[in-house]
Image (cartoon, rainbow, N blue to C red):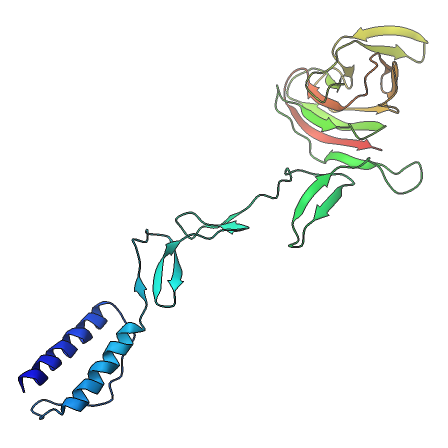
Length: 277
C-alpha cells in the first residue's frame, strides 16, 4: 500500500505540473476513487499514460524574447525567432518587405523587369512621346490648381525628350514679379550657365538679354498666361525657343531639366502643364 500511495502522489504531482505548464489534456485508462483498493496494474497504466502525454507535449527552449514569433525547433520544442527572406520581422510581429532595388518614382514609357514573384526589379524611362503623328506628346507635369511657395521651384526632368512645351494659364501671385523658366545642361545641378537671348519677332531685333531665365508672364499679381516651346532640346548652340517671348539659349549642351519659379511672392493659382516628346 505504501508503494501505491507513493505512485498516486507522483501521478498527482505530474498532473499538477501538466496543468501549470498548460500541457495537453491527458486521458488515463483507469478511474480510481477515494477509498478504493488500487490495483498496481491499473495505477501503472495510468502512470504510463500520463508520462507518454508529457513526453509528447511541446516545451519552450532557450529564452524567447517578448514580441518574437514562435518557431518550432523540433516536433516537441519551441523557441522565439524572426521571419527571414522577402518579408522579415525584427523582434515583433511588424513585417518589413525587402527593397527591390528600384528607386521610387514615376517612369515615363518605361522599360521594366519583373521577377517570378511579380516584383519590379528594374525600371528605366524611355524616350517621351509615343504613338504616331506630330501631336504625340507625353504629359510630364500637370496641376490644374497650381500653387508654389516663394523661394521654391517646380523642376521637370526633360533629359529623355527632344521637345518641350510649358503652358501656364491664369497664374496668380501674392506679389508682383515674373514667372520664369530656367534651363539646366548638367542634370539639374546648376541652371543657366550662359545667357538666354530674347528676341522681338515684330521688330526683328534684339530686345534684351536675360542672364537668368526665359521670362514668362510679367508684372502684377493678377492672372497671367504664357507659353514656352523649345523644339530641339538636344541641338547644338543655339537652341531656339518660341512662345510669348522668342529667342535662343546659347549653350552647346543638351537641356536636361527646366526649373519654373516666381521672382517674387507665392504662386497662388492657375494651372501649369509641361508636355514633351
